[in-house]
Image (cartoon, rainbow, N blue to C red; front, side, top):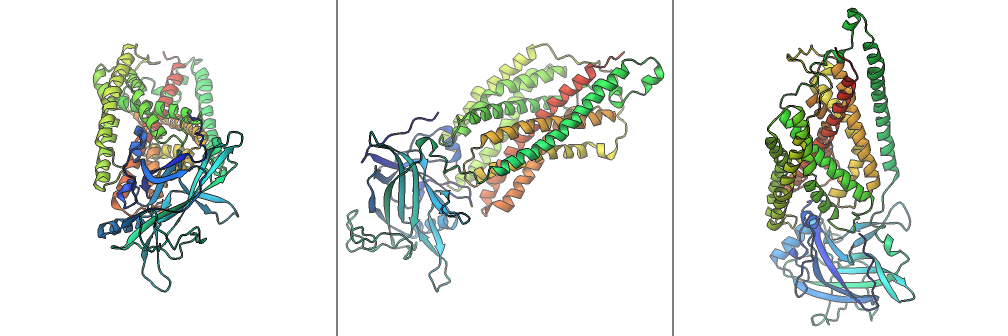
Amino acid sequence: MHQAGKWFMQKDHLPVKVNKLTSIKTQLPYSFYSLPFCKPDTIVDSAENLGEVLRGDRIENSPYVFEMRVPQMCQIVCKISVGEKEGKVLKEKIEDEYRVNMILDNLPLVVPIQRVDQEGAYFYQHGFHVGAKGQYSGSKDEKYFIHNHLSFTVKYHRDAQRDVSRIVAFEVKPYSVKHEYGQWNDKKTHLTTCDPNAKRIITSSDSPLEVEAGKDIVFTYDVDFKESDIKWASRWDSYLLMTDDQIHWFSIVNSLMIVLFLSGMVAMIMLRTLYRDISKYNQLETQEEAQEETGWKLVHGDVFRPPANSDWLCVYVGTGVQFFGMMLVTMVFAVLGFLSPSNRGGLMTAMLLLWVFMGLLAGYSSSRLYKLFKGSEWKNIALRTAFTFPGSVFTVFFFLNILIWGQKSSGAVPFTTMFALVLLWFGISVPLVFVGSYLGFKKPAIEDPVKTNKIPRQVPEQAWYMNSIFSILIGGILPFGAVFIELFFILTSIWLHQFYYIFGFLFLVFLILIVTCAEISIVLCYFQLCSEDYLWWWRSYLTSGSSALYLFLYATFYFYTKLEITKFVSAILYFGYMLIASYAFFALTGTIGFYACLMFTRLIYSSVKIE
């Protein structure tokens, strides 16, 4: 929950914390002190939750300490001499466009950048660049310049009666300055380039500081305090400035069109099957008329015959239910505002824990289905449900983690956290899957509405457009079409390091996704049964599940058009995580389609009297 903001008196200490260095070019975070920056006397790690560790956040204290409402000019932090090694590291990080992230009173540091289109409007870039590349005038050589002077602005909202204030913004303008001084005397050194008494203040990078081995870097900062009328409660708004709400409404209207079209088709099918066909069918007197019954009724003796590989179907349905439960509860929490961006890592932690506890539902639904298929080995199914999906995801994750670790990035999940994840999985998730399976298997089996014949009937030759692969691929287009605009924003927030917080829109899109998956599966399932093809179990799952294929293709397209990733490791990371996401999306959408078809077939066959 939002804790009320901290009130600061004048001259109160304001410690600045540093977070990871991030780059949208490499996607590999590094800890702040992996670069030759000024260090405090002792470096202290701030407590982190599971989600923060998984995201690679490393929050530590820094040598920057302000006093509330006490402006300071030209403060020296320290002087660092750059050797070959440090120079190389700095140049690499500047080349990869790394940014430094800092935090004051839980607010991330931003650089306000003037918008081209509107006068006086800014957008905020998270963190400031370590440095910049450039040339001296008249020279062609690319040089690397470091941002060694930081001009901070802290905005506060003041309570006039009590003369205390709360921090509502933390901004910086970074400059590169070649400082000049006479005698070096640690922090008391007199800088000629930055002297408040002589009214020499730094407002540009006109004489920048080049990163060279064997040279010194003097780190300095100014801090200014400005009173602001932003209320404490709305201090996050500038961070979350939505580019445009219109496009989300456009996306939702677009998706609703798809939904209306499909709903119309489903309604037509329901009316035809349940009303006209059945009333006619149940009034048949003569044998001849009975011969002309529509296709779907001819297969009534085979439609509930268990499919091939029915145990795997149970496992995947269980996984999908687990995922569905997790998404639904996470979104409800997010819409109610429990997972605001000020709560770093909260979203990830919540999703992990929910996934673990939803194991109960996974076991229950997979064993219920297994019993419908007349299975008896429920422990076997429970075991597969508990290990198939998490096992494959964990393998990919472990492999990616070794790659990140090889790059010495702080994004590598430490061994202790890995151990905690395995513990959550084996200690809580697996037992819950077994408990769920046991409960599901104890309940009486679901009765089929019609009897299944002893001998399977032959499936007639199908038209090319009823071919299973063709109809499965067609089925995935609509669910993907319903979500893909929102998907763009989600990908941008993950890979371009922006905040995603429009959970209201996301929840609407999620509901639309559920309806679309259900309806497309029902429509295609009905066409399939009408052409006397009763092998619908797997097909209903794959029809809506194939949208995951389009998701992965879209992620590939996004990679080439929007991201500037050049490193091989970073590309593997991207595709590894996208593969996991697509796999999860497959289980989710497939399960929705499957349950919709199961309910649909049970409904239409239960209303037919079969002699």
